[in-house]
Length: 463
Image (cartoon, rainbow, N blue to C red; front, side):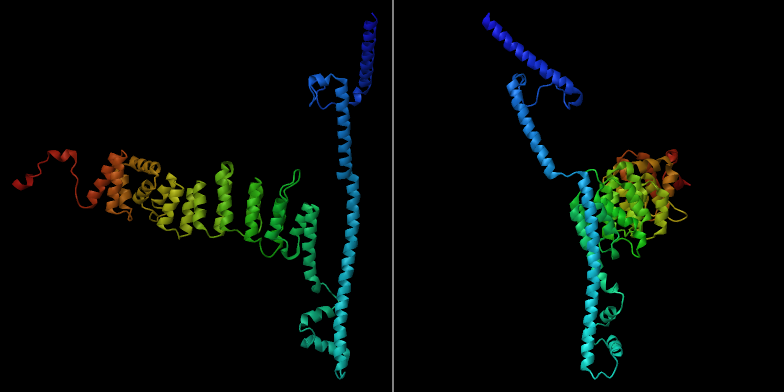
């Protein structure tokens, strides 16, 4: 009985402790927000350890130590947002003081150089006979470049406006300030600072390389894309357009970021220098993005036309399905050879295009021979397109074949015979017979029809 009572008292004490802990938990429950379901097993602990008070106490101590360590790291590595604002204000004040000091330093340097010039001029004047006044002597120096060998330097230093003499220092300041902004991580400020730099001193491939090295920043715009947006948007403010290398890099950047809308605006609205590579980049992008293929072809056509690449511009027109526009383009720029047009139908084998090229256009003879075009298609493993053309011409009957052959001055007799054999091999027996019939009639040979087989061919001998 005594043992049982002792055990019962121990159990009762444990129950009381659990009730007390539960009561404390209930009072704090409204302030506690669990990120995980408390009914689930504790990560890193077995089920037996999860119900052991000693194991839980030890684990709690471990978590408290870890929390204290993280809190200490947070206090060292991170600062409140207000502290950052205070530092920004301090930096602005320091930068203003630096600018004032630089201006004062520049002014003092200018005065020092001017005093040096005057001092040297005075020394020369004293060594001379001093027959003229000192002011006349200075004017004589400016005219004859007796000092430093450069009239421009003397005139600038003797003037009261030091702006002309400090242009190089201004450019140097822009470069140093830009590098400073990059090192501070102020990429957006660096972008607009570079875009507005005098004489476009920071609009070059070196700046592009620096923004490429920065890469993308989570939650912020891509600095390289911002740079191209900025320099392209102010391109009209300069006498010369943005150079071809920067234009190409900007188009590549815009397309890599899936911003075809920006590229469209740049190509159609801004002052850029186009190149064949720029057109090729947009053309290849359209081949991959079928949804925007028509837009890409139109943009590539604009660039190719600007660069005088008429073959590629014509290909873009044909791939857009603008066959009538392509024919007008060929008529406008009369520098397309038959080999160029053969290559065109190979790259863009539209039946309508081939038919337009092999027929009269606006009263002018066809640009290509129908027979040679079909033979070319069969020779470059484009049999389906060739067969389709044969089907179309076969629908017109013998009269259409004869009209086509008579108005085709490029295809020789041997080539037409070769075409007739191809028709025979591909199941166009009637078309093959029509071609051979026209060939025989053109050669002065009359073909006897089936109705004439009953006529006695030797009858004239007996008359």
